[in-house]
Image (cartoon, rainbow, N blue to C red):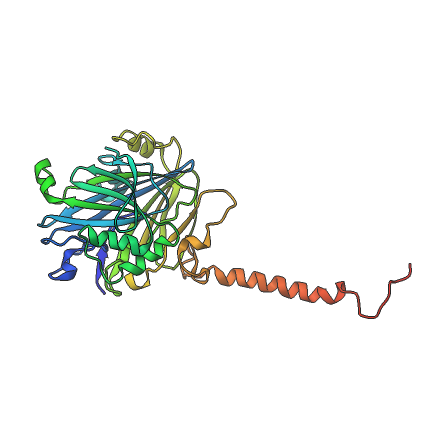
Length: 354
């Protein structure tokens, strides 16, 4: 079985041009591409931080190869208020935190209507990236991508519809090789991008990681979460496991806060580190998150039927949640039916005399 290695959270996605001809490197990922050359977008580490009703989604786009343009599109849980350059080394510090042995400018909202039928909410440039935040249905966003020079993999329409049903907000990032050369940006140099997203529903899209991949290619990804309290997590399948779940150390938070544009990092937070390892053909679900005490994650946020829901961390055998709920409901029904004849007055009997 082929493996596709990545380190991410929420979902930064791309598909290599090599899917349309040529060999694909081990670090290639699923998504959308441009027409020219062999330039590829490599997904790296991403952080999803949720605190006091605001999610900050920080990812790094890394490009390799030759050509003019390449791009990707990322589903978002809600409309961002800004998209700016992220911290210079925050993501590397997170990787160092969980693998200690291996350590070694915002755009204004435009709300203009696009010809493809989408709302262009925000446009900005970050280094050699052209960032566009879109709102629209799957068909409309797909048409916008085609009109703007993206090649769509055969599974793109289904995946865009999958996300648009819950949140029709997407962030497209397009790499301009000419501008990168003018800026002195070399191949393999990452550009961190941070979106600030007010939302009450910080679900984590996972299905997008398999976009454009063959069903037997393994998606291996790292998911970092920072939340204001220990979250409850619910996945739509057994292909994700929790590796670390603990209060973030003061040292880690201080380090993150000292990076450029990372002053928002709270004084206290919960760190969750999860790993996705499953064939792309089985990654048809997302990760639901609840950071509110006594409120379970929403079943609809996993993107599939509740019958497939699995708690994270799992017991290790991929036991779905639904049999437990079904058994409880069945037990309650049996209990009620058992007592019902005793509670119901017998037909034809009058009131009992005192």
